[in-house]
Image 1: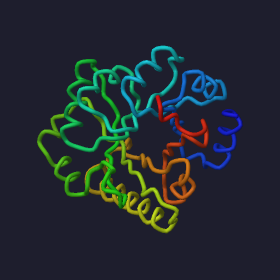
Image 2 (image 1 turned 90 degrees about the horizontal axis):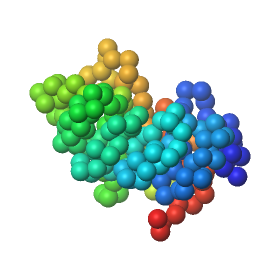
Image 3 (image 1 turned 180 degrees about the vertical axis):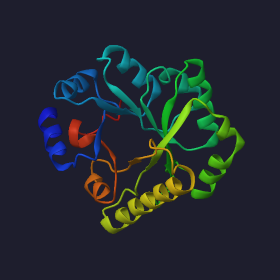
Length: 223
C-alpha cells in the first residue's frame, strides 16, 4: 500500500510543495518500498535510527532530521543530513555549526517556532529568534545556513485553530525574510503540516509537509 499511499498524497500537492516521508520507527523494508516508488526525502526524529538507516539505504536519499535534536547526538547525523528542521535554540545551532565545521560542511537548518497551544512542543518565540539572529555568535557561524522555519500545530480537530497557527508561522517567515534574509535566496522553506493537517498547511503556504502515517500506517510506538 505504500506506493499507492504516496501516489494519492502526491496527487494532492502542488509542485511548490515537497513531501517529506516521515519514516521514524518504520523498518528499512518500508523505506525501501517508498524509495522504489520514487520517494527520495525521508524524515527521522532519532539521530541513531537515522544514522543506521542511512548506512544501509541508497545513498541518493535526502535525510531530513525533524525531531528534537540533543547536542550529544549531532555528531551521528552531520556527515550526511540534508536539512535539520528543528533548530529550537541558539546553543543547538552553535553545536551544529561546530560539528559541521569538523566535516567541512555547510548544513541547512530551519528555525523551529512554538506555534501550538500545547506547552510540551519545542520551539523559539519571535524574541528568541531575533536575539539569535542579531547575535555576534550567529554572525560568526560559517557552517550552518538558515533556510526557513518549521512549526507544529496543536493536535486538535479544530481546523480554525490549526489554520490560525499555520498563518502565524507564515507571518513569522515573512517577517524574518524581510528583516534578516531579504537578499538570501535560500531562505524559502516553511515546514508545516503532518498527516492529519497537511492540506490546511498547503493552503497556508507550506513548502515542506511532513507526512508519516498516511504513507506508512500507524507509528510503531514499541520501537
